Image (cartoon, rainbow, N blue to C red; front, side, top):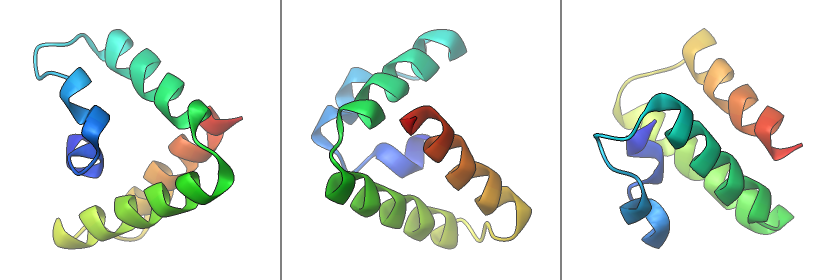
Length: 72
């Protein structure tokens, strides 16, 4: 998922050495703070990053569902 957030100014808050739990808590806080338009743009960015990585189908669906779930 880091490729999904690299274009956001807040991506610098996430490092490769972070624990999974800390990363999940941090991304959840960022996603929940987004308004509906920001979240839609964010999901579009996730889809574009997945496309560049040639991820599609179930993998992409799971990624989108993950973000929708933490959005609340």
